[in-house]
Length: 286
Ligand code: AMP
Image (cartoon, rainbow, N blue to C red; front, top):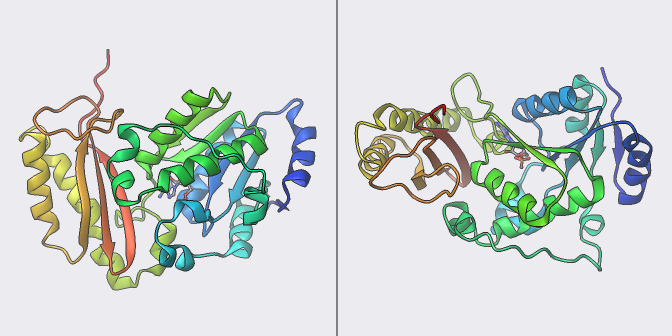
C-alpha cells in the first residue's frame, strides 16, 4: 500500500522533483484520470523502469473539440489516488487549468503533416494541437527521463514521437501495449459511460479488428478494409472510421501491404466515442 503525494502547483512539484532528480530517473505518465487497470499496467511498467514516477491527472480542455464530451468526461481524483496507492508510491500531479496554461503560456506550433491530417486529425480538428501542447507543458514542468503512452492511442503516440524529434526534448518515449477487458474490449475511461448491454455491443470493435487481421494478406488492404466494414455492420454501433495504415507514416494502405501494417477504428456507442487498433501484419526481422 503506497502513500502517493499529491501536488497541484507547478512550483511545489518542481521543488519536490529537484531533490529526486540528482540520483534518480524520473518517469512521467500523463493521463486524464478516471484510471482503470489499463492505466495501472502503465504505472507499474513506469515504476519498474524509473526511481520516481509522476502520474499527471488533468482533463485537458484544449484537446476536446466537443464541449459535451469535455463536460461528461469522468472525473474521480479521490478514487484515482486510492487506486494508485494500491500500486505503491507515486507522485500525483493534478493541476488546475490556470496552472497548466498561465497567462504567459507560449503555444508550440509544429507541423504534423500527414500525421495530423488523417483519422483523429480529420474527425477531431485541433485535438492533436491540444495534446501536443499539454504533453510538452508537462515535459517542461517535470523534465522526465522517460514518458509513458499507451498503444491504445496509436496516432497520439506517433504524434508525440514526432514532437519529441522536432523539439529535441531529451526524453525517451515508451509506448505500452493495449490493455483489454477479458471480453476483448479495450479498457477506457469512457467505458464507465456504457451500460452492460452497450459494453457487450461494443465488442464488435475488437471483433472487427480481429476479423480484419484474419483476412489481411488474403486481400488487398482496400478490399480487406471493405469486408471488415461490412462485418462491423452486423453490430449496433456507428462507425466513424476504419483505416488500414502504414505503421509509421499512418498513410492509408490501399493496394499494397507493408510490414507492421496497422488498422485503427473509431465507433460510437450512443454518444460514447470508442477507439481501438491492431497490428495486422508483423514486422519482419532483418
Ligand atoms: P487517457 O487518460 O485516457 O488520456 O490515457 C492516458 C494514457 O493511458 C494514454 O497514453 C493512453 O493511450 C493510455 N491508455 C489508456 N487506456 C489504455 C489501455 N487500455 N491500454 C494501454 N494504454 C492505455
